[in-house]
Length: 363
Ligand code: AMP
Image (cartoon, rainbow, N blue to C red; front, side):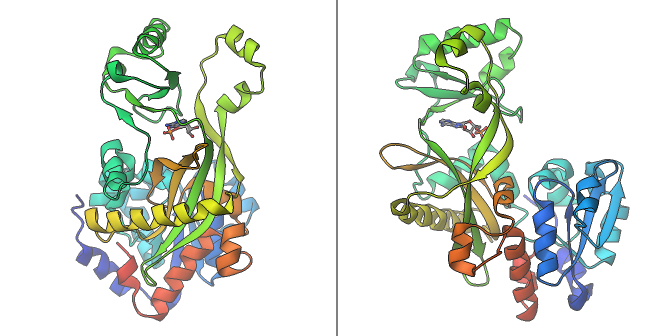
């Protein structure tokens, strides 16, 4: 629960020159197209960069203002906050911003107006809360197993913490689960404390689609902006080896995202796509008001019963939006050419300023 009062943020926002708003973000994740889109919509831009990591931003001429800091987490320091406020900044939160700034700091100490709902960031980060958002409106998710004894089909076993899916494994019975856990313990890959926190869910043998939506609070409309599929190391390298060699090399795969491919779905699935997007907006609105606001993503697997099954969500801009910096097939249908997610965010902020409704979409 955020200790920052909406009034505190509104006080800062009220002092801003609305004709001189800067769109700012941390130089990482999706910042290149957030800043590019902001420029296209006529905003000034600022990027907060860790020293030594500014090369791509300078080479792509990403921002008007470069704020260099020693380490990413310094973005919450009071001098940086003051600097951002002095530029009339609205900060766009992305995955790296949340990871480096920290949820507690965002909820309690970061008094710079942000686009989106800062409360909901915790809901996507904590598995139980994320699950609540999905089950509220019966969105199809993988079946969860509380006890490994109940395993009755292929399951994927996940461990806590961001370790890029290292050590995830697939098992089809309780015996196989125990054998693999013991094997991993003996290799030192996991500890007893990890075993207590294993997350076991149905393994969906399907194709991966990460669906990028934009929910406009101003228009009360869910837009389909694009889709990507993940390119993950080392699993995607491993599957290039013939199956018999995969068995021989006794290799522990990980699922660390290293890139994204743009993708489209068969058209008959789009009804489900809009249905689950609308449902998530409704449950977020009920459970974490003001709910979703702007970009969000549902990471899905589509099985051969043509079910779209959601295994993860992002309640802010997701990294896969980098696959359509110049627009996607879907954003083209809605907005015409060149509408990236970054530009869509900037367009929403511009519209809110014109309608004098900025405080409605800022937290
Ligand atoms: P996660 O850490 O939950 O984002 O998952 C990392 C990767 O594991 C995903 O991108 C998928 O490739 C795979 N994965 C996750 N959950 C499942 C599942 N229930 N069934 C099949 N593959 C999964």
